[in-house]
Length: 284
Image (tube, rainbow, N blue to C red):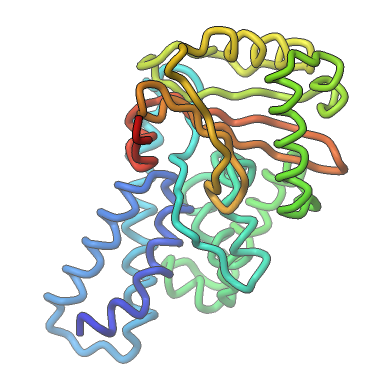
C-alpha cells in the first residue's frame, strides 16, 4: 500500500499546499490522509479518488480554523515559500504556485477555494467535485461561479515568461545595488505594491506599501541597512525567481514578484522566520 500511496503523494501535497499555504500544515494533512487510508477497513475501489477526497475535506476543515487564527496575525499574511520543483507540463499547475495566485485565493472561503482549485487547476469534473466536497453537482457549479466572481476583479494575468521574470528581477536588483532610482522606477507600474509578512517577529512594514515612490524608497533603505555579513542570491521559489537575503548565513527575507506586460506589478516579501526555515542556510 505504501508504494501505491507514494504514487499520489505529490498530487496530495500539491492540493494541500495550495489550499493551506504552509508546508508544515500541508505535510500534516497528507500524513493524516495516509494514516486514515492505511487504517481503513472498508473496501476502496479507487485509492486516488479516496485520498484526494480525504485530503480535500481535511484541508477545508483545517482552513476554517486557520482563517480564525489569522485574525490575530500581526500585519499581512502570505503563504510560506517552497523550494521544491512542483512544476508540471500543465501551465495551470505551474502558475497556481505563484505568490500572486496564492494570495488571490485568500479572498475565497474554504469550500470556494476547494472547488476552484479542483476545477480550474486540477481539472476535476463538476460531478467529481460534488463527490469530493459532498455538494450536489448544481451547488458545486454555483460555488465555482461565486468563486470566479470574487476573483474576477483582481485575478492576475500570468503573461510573463520565466525568462522575462528573471530579466526584470535581475534588472531591478542591479538598479537597487547601484542606487539607480530612475532605473528602479522605470521597471515598476505606478501602482506597484509591496507586501511583507513578518507576524511581528522581524522588522517589517505592517501595511502594504503602495506606489513606485514608496517601494523604491523602501528597497533602497533595506539595502542600506544590510549588515556587512549580509548577502543575497536569486533562486527559484514557488516556480518563480526570488531574491533570498541571508544574514550570518541564515535566510532573513525571501522576495518574489508578479510581473505583467513588461513591468513589475507587485512584490511579496517573507520576513517571518518561521516561514523561512525551509530555505536552509549559507556557508560562511
